[in-house]
Image (cartoon, rainbow over all chains, first blue to last red; front, top):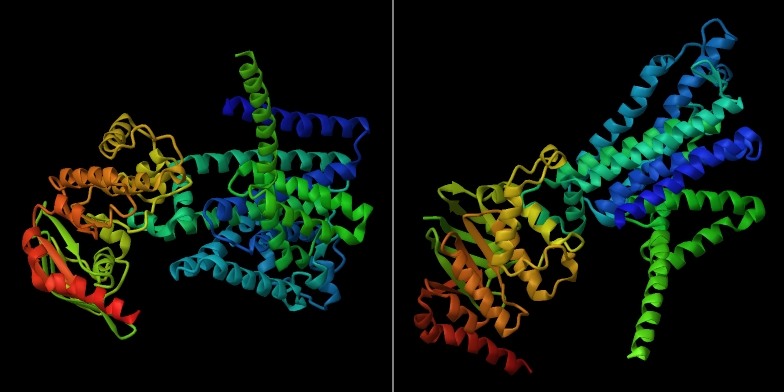
Length: 366
Length: 251
């Protein structure tokens, strides 16, 4: 029953996003802009999966996921910018334009590895993972939880945002990295590449979804929920909580970084604005609105909220935050299980009504 | 000797919560600890399972010092704890609650690549029958009644296969019938495990106290003996009634 329902849902998702939208794009019904917009939503959904694993399943409220997202995004962006600089070769040695404007003549050492695409990919995952490991180790070892966890991760996000804002960090400062021309020799502005990136993001979302599903269905996933339910019981049952929390924190950071890597080439720009505290809080909100503790809820939340965001900001640009706030209040008050819970409730309500009607009818017959 | 405790003391904010000069428990012994509120009974168990750090003292479990070890290390040594307030995993099924408790390798990778086997299934069902939850295995633990949650927590402790079980008020909030069943269960378990039970319900204590009963008052050991000895001891009666009188006088 549950399986066939899932299967139908997957089928509908695949038909809509892997067949209808791309076909529409090829035939000219769906604009390139829409395609690349949805491609970016998929990236957000991947990051939301990470938030759901950390917060929804394990109960750790991490408010620095957008920072991990940007670490991934920046690494790919750095590679693209490096390649652009090498291709145009404005000044003797190839260094990005913004450095030239800042009168920096030699390439900073940490930019060097990003000349290679492979290294950029590896570093884009390795740096956030290492960050999550070190940061997580000290937080979880000191048994920081709940609100304190939220505050300390927010502080990290804020500190990193301030660091990336500075020109001295040599990552483009407030303006971030932009002017992306090509990736692996493919022009990023051509519709074919845009569609390719869209499909790649969709595949990435499906892949990470099934990976996460495997994770939460395994005994490992049950231990995570056990930690959320009762940390003390879990440790008296001889599970080393630190290991589990650290592992899932790193997985969440990797998912966010992977999402960021797909996101940067599709947007054409990455700035510190993507990693401020608000961006992280928004990620948590997608999951809260979609349905915390359900992987489908996280994806649904990320897609719906971002889609609404795009619609609302073009129709009534000033009122988006009010709409989001209103949605949030309604969800917290009436639908604590988010959109997914809402759908199930309405679906269940109809089912129940039907049952009641048949019951009444049966009684009348008797 | 399964457990030997010497000169154990702990105080919270200047108040002596526990000041236990000597305590011993044999293997496969069922010991009941009674005492008025604030006597330090739960604190004693908290120290044994690593939740609370004592100020000084010595705890030997099978001649291994326990103090200073983490909760996980103590659990691995074979000491299992049931809390006063039922502490289970409410969002998991009863079966999963028991599966997580079952004694096995509990590292991340062991959990990631865990494959359920026939043997594990049989073992869990066995224990489920013992605690009377065999029909509730698929239910979410949060939906169980209070008594059933208590039994589930006992099952969780049993599945860890500890040599020493620390059981804090197992009959609290149970009906008479449930209480009696719990008593039978504990007597049955004491054939294979050393057990320390904290309890207030005297009828229940009478049912399970086949060995010694220890009375704690204000953190100190007052008397140790069989149930009938303890019940007729004037000091025990005074400590219970005396306190009640103080409370009455304060009205």
